[in-house]
Image (cartoon, rainbow, N blue to C red; front, side):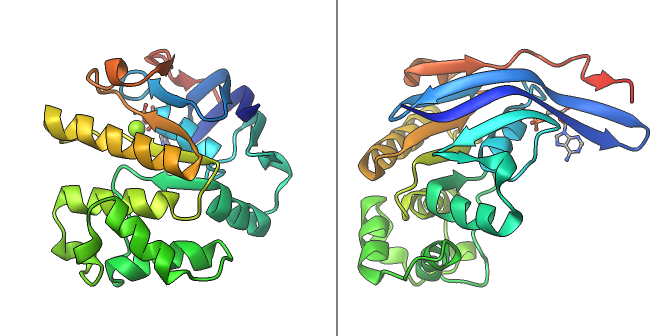
Length: 224
Ligand code: ADP
Ligand code: MG
């Protein structure tokens, strides 16, 4: 079973008079339970592809089916609820909510998905990523590594079908980079999720069983 099916997807961004083609006819299928890295140099469209998979960016052309949903057919409201339940996202800049304590950041992920808040599940997730003692801190009171672990817990708390992580090894030394990937892998597996990591980091390739490489997009500008 494929949890992701991307068919002939193009994504153009308008920048004033110019059109930037971020994705050019991308087709990729990802089987359930797989751990896959989207590789490619900076600017090749890795982040754009993750946003497309999460239903955060609408492709200019092509079809995207994720976790049984044909994203092109979902109105914004249903799409947000679908995302909250089916996709866990670890953004490059983590995006923890600064005004909320760690515990409430996880609770928010449950309620935004339309799920009842489950304190026991939140506590178990924070323990699982080794920040059980930080539940009452605010994000600004965390180290970068601690904040990343909270973001990983938030991504898997609703047992999504698909977990997406954008450049999870950025700014980490070798040992911490490997540990971050292993934590993502273990937590995705525990949640029963397929894991897709976007990374330009050469250290990631040998640590991930499957790689989908996007070509360099030097001539990314197309005539409007
Ligand atoms: P990567 O993650 O591989 O570095 P991105 O998906 O971030 O690549 O970007 C792919 C291309 O799309 C780049 O040329 C980038 O400048 C462009 N791009 C990304 N987001 C936007 C945007 N919101 N508006 C205009 N251009 C964008
Ligand atoms: Mg990127």
